[in-house]
Image (cartoon, rainbow, N blue to C red; front, side, top):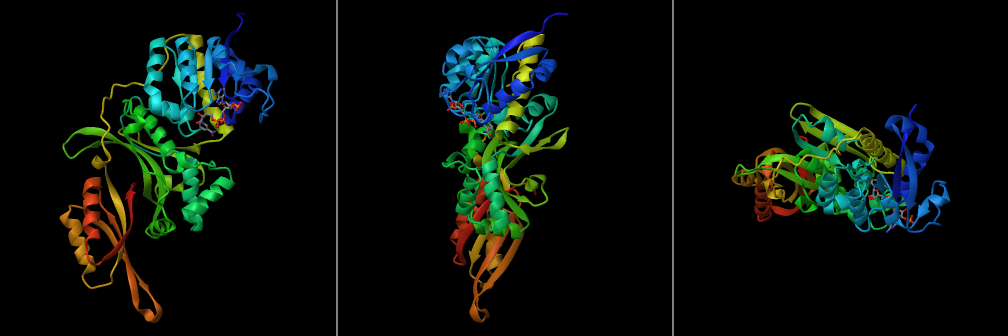
Length: 438
Ligand code: NAP
């Protein structure tokens, strides 16, 4: 019987995810060898501090601060350091040396993905990054492989667990944003500096990756229109709830034709109202889900844990076994295709339904005035509901108007809202939020 080949695996980073990857590589060595056809030998672990305490007990002799030397001698490199440098230089060096690379680094891929993909193509090796979007959920491979014979038309994703937890807290307890954020930080779902999550930057990086694979075109972070959740108020959530909606931070990539007939892809991240019966509305707490619409497959949904050391390690190991099998069997790496050549459209080209909250004077003819103004701007109203707020002695203090429109362009909606603000019967525009799934 021929001896099984051994492949050297260099691990860069031993934090939340890296430590679990190292544990599984050691504990499950026999099962992984049986599935791969080669033994995956952990040849070293590069860290900043070799004597730091680790969550997992690992052989001390594996640790090094010399990542460059470790990478030079590896068949497979797993990058789980995070950040741009030295991760970028180390990945490029690994690819040039002919090693396959697995990474979970969405920030790096969103910033400089094309350089890395091109280097992998040139070297004929695999660069895999399933863990970079939605943690444990197998989503990139289904888009890239399973749906490669179909045409994806739209992707809607809850891809940031922190913001989903905060919005879910606000929805279930009526809390304000700041209190829900503090609770998320207390439970470890949000970092001390939550900017990347709550401003939507993390979701935008993932949106760029999802759009690139779904539409066979490389989209960069600059192509993504990004709005976070910091301005979502408890009253927005309450009004949405009252009208049968839930607010989620969605990463959206969809094929559109703009007003001039130009085809393109709109890639955007923003708080969005979803009908409570939409499958994504049921995604609670810090969970993630991605909803895909494809011409032939129809609607698909992928759901699971979007973060956490052990769940994310599952996605990393899946990529590692796949890359290692290719090294055993031979042949070039399987990369994403970039034959789509569809332009990214600006946010003005996107059309969605809108929810508009208005604080209005309670006078006869107000509803007719508002409806006429919407009609003049070509924005058609689907639902208009008025709630009267009474003070002492049943005198009317104010009236609240909630409007849901049919699909309209961003430009038409913005012009309508500006015109509405100018009406003498309007006290204030209390919220303007996009709606999907109606
Ligand atoms: P982490 O806990 O902060 O761990 C980072 C590790 O990298 C640490 O072991 C650190 O060494 C090492 N490191 C950082 N800079 C280094 C440098 N300059 N030289 C050598 N070693 C360095 O990070 P993580 O949460 O495991 O995340 C790793 C990657 O996975 C990130 O790209 C992240 O975006 C991605 N990801 C994470 C999750 C998640 O749930 N955590 C989910 C999906 C994707 P020391 O320990 O010595 O400081």
